[in-house]
Each structure stands twice: as structure tokens, then as C-alpha cells.
Image (tube, rainbow, N blue to C red):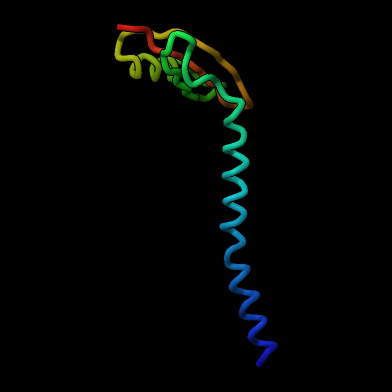
Length: 95
């Protein structure tokens, strides 16, 4: 009986392995966020980051910025291309 008890407890502990791996991946992703763009500019305006395919038309990023700023316009803070992703960081202009 002892042999079967240890086997079943081993199986139940292995059930948590995918959750532990997911938690580790989440922590790694969150730690990468610390080197991201500033959340606010020196004048207090919040920044927004949008992404679109780098190989395609980058106009989708521009459209996202225009919609987010509701016609007030925006200032580009940073742009980057990593692999197949284009990233635009912007701040809406004051109304």
C-alpha cells in the first residue's frame, strides 16, 4: 500500500507542474516590462504603446494612435522594430 500511496502523491504533485511553468513565464514577462517606455512624459502626458506587423502596412499603428487621441493629434515618443513587430509609443497632444 505504501508503494501506491507514494505513486499517487507523485502524480498529484506533477499536476501542478504546468501551472508553475506558467507562473515562471509570467514573472519573466513582467520583468521584461521594466525596461519599457516611460509611462508619463515630463509634461505629465501619459504614453501609449501600440504594435502592428513590421512587414505590413504600419498605418494600422498610426490609425490606432489617431483613434486613441480622438483627433487631437499625437507626438511620437519612440518607434522600434523587433522581429516581425513594429512598436509605436506616442502621447496624445493636449486639446
